[in-house]
Figure (cartoon, rainbow, N blue to C red):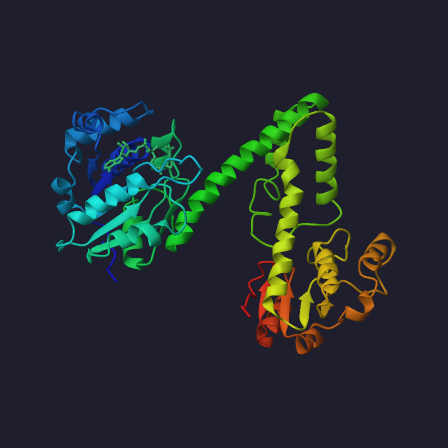
Length: 430
Ligand SMILES: NC(=O)c1ccc[n+]([C@@H]2O[C@H](COP(=O)([O-])OP(=O)(O)OC[C@H]3O[C@@H](n4cnc5c(N)ncnc54)[C@H](O)[C@@H]3O)[C@@H](O)[C@H]2O)c1
C-alpha cells in the first residue's frame, strides 16, 4: 500500500473540461497544485491555455486567467503529452443518460482506455480518481479491469458535489468531500489534494463513494419535489406554502436534521400512515397531483414485504422477534408494521415468539389492546415476557426496534443469527 504524499503539491491531470472538469482544474490550480486539463474539444483546450473560461460560471474566468498566467494551469488535447508528469488523473468526462435511463459510460471507457494504452510501461505510480457520477460497481466492474495491464495505476472514486452557477464557491467551500477505494494510501492521497480547504474528508469504500453521490442527488430531488407538492397543496387551501416550508425548516431536531434519515424498518404508528392517507385523499379531492406523497405508503409496504421475505428466506424454524410496537420506548401498537409482519408469518405457518419490553397484555388496554387482539388473536401464546427466554428458544432472531444497551449485549452474546431490521447494529447473518 502506497503512503499518502504528505503535504507536497501534486501534479493533477484533469480529463474532461466541461462544467465539472474546468472548475475542478482551475480551483485545484488555485489551491497550489499543478494542473493540466485534457479534453478532445479543441476550443476548451485553447480557452484554458489563453486564460479564458470555456463557458460562463461566476468567478471561473478570473481563476483561470490567474492560474494560466502563473503556469499552474494549462491544457492539452493529447494524453501522452501530460500523463507522464501526473500523480493523479481526475476523470470528469460526461456520463449522460441513455435512452432507457441507464448511465452512458462511453466517454468514461474511452478516456480510461486512452490512459491504459500509454501506461503499461509506466514506472511512476498514478491514481485514477473517478469524479464523474457513476453507478456503484462501475469502478470495480468497468474501470479497474481496463487497467488490468497497468500495475502502477490505482483507482479511487472522488465524486463531485458542486452546483452550476455557484460551482467555484462550492469547490472552495465544499459541502462534502468523499473519497473511496480499495487502497487506503491512494484514498488518503486524493483526499490530500483538498487539504487547503476547510473540509474533513469522508474516506469510505469504493462502492460507498459511488453510492453517496446518487443518494445526495436523489435526496435533493426528493426534497424539491416534496416542497413543491406541499406548496401545490397549500395554495388551494389558502395557505402560504413558503411560510409552511420555512417554518418546517426551523425545526432542526426532527425536520432539517439527521432524524429519520437512517435505513431501518418500515414506519407505522398512529400518526404517519393516518396523516399521509388524509393528505393524499384531500389532495385528490382538490385535484392536486401529489405522486411523491402518494408513494410513501406503498414504498413503506414494499419495505415491509422485503423484511417478511428476509425472515422467510432465513430458513429459521423458531423465529424470535425483538420488538412488537412500531418503535422502541412505547407500548403503542396501532399500525405497528411488526404486527402486520407477525400476522403474515403466522399465516405462513412459521413458528415465532415475540419479546417487547413494553407490551404486557395485562397492562395495555383500549384501542391498543383491541388492535393487537384483532390482528393476532393468539398473541398471548407467542408473547415471551423475558428476552433471556426468547434467546434460549429461538434459532433465528429478528430485531425490529433498537434494544436497550443491555438487550444489545444479550442479543450479541446469544450468538444467534440476527436479521437487524432496525439498523440497531446487532446484525449477524444466518
Ligand atoms: N454539471 C454538474 O453540475 C455536475 C455536478 C456534479 C457531478 N457531475 C457529473 O460530472 C460529470 C461531468 O459532468 P459535466 O457537466 O462537466 O459534463 P460535460 O458534458 O460538461 O463535460 C464533459 C467533458 O468531457 C469531455 N470529454 C469527453 N470524452 C473525452 C475524452 N475521451 N477525452 C477527453 N475529454 C473528453 C467533453 O469534451 C466535455 O468537455 C458527469 O458524470 C456528471 O454527472 C456534474
